[in-house]
Image (cartoon, rainbow, N blue to C red):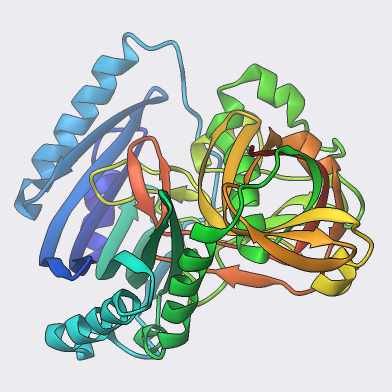
Length: 457
């Protein structure tokens, strides 16, 4: 099959041609309150052809492999038609051709667990939260997806890759005196269904957090020193900085090319940020990207200085930089674009959590993320849980804590990075250009940030 696909790609008549064929099965379960709202098992098979002619792309999808020669011709015809009208010319950065097979290696296989057993397991978690005092509603969702992907291009690359993806998210709602609050728990990964067992304590914590938050006072708005837990710090570095580091977001914006000039300082010497596809078992694990480029650990900030960004072959070619293995597609229905994998703040020199807070007279400890948004370099995030810090100690719980600011000011205002790195995997994913939810991970130690604007009463 590899020689056939490569031969078809080489004979396409295009300057460059790549073919992707994907075969996936997925199981999903969703509980809403006391009801089992949805159970679904699905199978998806299809492929795409992407070609470049005179630096212009043509892209066609198909479901029948017998249509492949005809679809290649269609993609070439589309690229030629677009080339006559387009002033933009793409250049692919060179990479060495690769031929490889990546077999599925699972610690525990979700396919070995019956659908009935999965329903009992996640239904049990749902019922446990529903039975907790003060909980008015719940939601539990689970999925697993197994995929077999073949990729070939006209340069001689052929990769057969098997992969798995699993995730679950649980939330509990509590209501008191007209105030509704949420507590949540999540888990995810690529190689171990056993991660989803034994989560009773996490369900209890989610329910307790919801009940306590419903009775907690609203934070008083102002400017505070904030300590973020590893999850919220990871969300921050992914959403506020990681997306700005994706090559297309830089290549297409002259202003961001000036702002994100390599060699510019963005933080203190202890600030180090990277994106990696090498962490086996995490949802951001990616041995080869969807252009057949081997993955790597890409440093974005080293010792406070901007040193890299996340590229596809196209964006690397446009910026005369090196491909980083970050070209990703949600499925065969989409062309690959620069996307993150596992985006992280590395450990720092400032000890443990207790060391970060010991000199804070009045501050906030922000935990988890309950959503947010970014607009260029501006961001707003809501903490999933939050507590006041008083005289170096964690004090009372508060709610409705929203952190906002400019990402570059915030990076410069990081005054402490602990050495307790932790990675977070959940059932969610990253969204960009209509491709959602792409599996990613994020990790960080606790970090301390001065002068954070907090919305509240």
